[in-house]
Image (cartoon, rainbow, N blue to C red; front, side, top):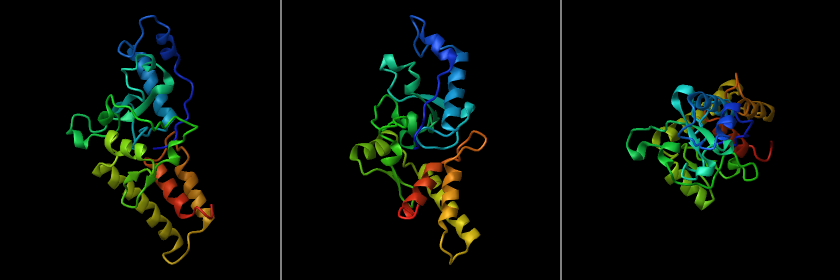
Length: 214
């Protein structure tokens, strides 16, 4: 999970919200398409929770505060783009918004004052966790972010970066800090408007390993 800086909402969403009977259920198709495109671009085309690659055809619009809170249904600050999270499969294989459903969580990727990146850790085996017991429970039980596939994907990208640095700099050479900074910048930047999937995992790993040198 990475911090998401919210931008300007689509004009079509604003126009719909001004209607007296407006809610999410009657959001016009064009406005929903505009909304999805805005959210995807805002997030760099990665899921708001697991950070896997998402596109217009394999994403869903997530309400951080569930839709039962009607006054937040069309609030752009409450809307995110999420992956499909194995929708239609057994509950223990679902994740992100699909597993979350109408449950509520405290960790919010759009909250600048309580930056989610400061509360999340990644282990070498790809598991995601937090020292905050409430957030840790949300990551595991509500969002189900430690499904086997997600954990394996996170472990793979960590191993890839370690192997790539070793290949370039040599097995017995120390990792030079300027090169480490370059890798962090790469994974923290957009490329053709897109973040690299699971980018924050790499940033966390490198910043932790070199916390006294960066």
